[in-house]
Image (tube, rainbow, N blue to C red):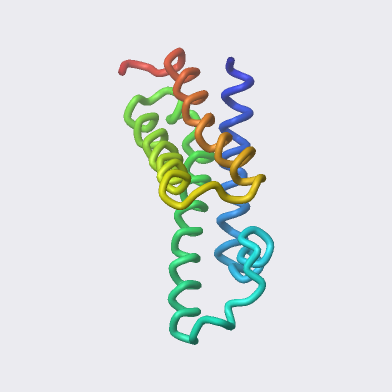
Length: 137
């Protein structure tokens, strides 16, 4: 179980750091490659700026959660408070995906059948394994 938990843990956190950094530095590329939005030209200048600022802000959170996970790995697996906070962050992000599925519909296949299941399963796998590793708690 340890190997599986760490595989999911590192895949999630490295992915958050890399995709967060990419979104912070090159959001238009994210829009084109991930969201399939070829151009923001149909939006006015103010709407483009607002969208880009909001997107960078959210990608900053993704980067921060991933970096926090990597830097506080030992605490996340041993300290009950760190474990709860980290799993809450992943859990609420996964909840956002579920709400999106229910309210907005099913997205593209990669997101629907690979990324979203991974984002939902990862906190569960980490939670299951960390029941064995938490100290005190």
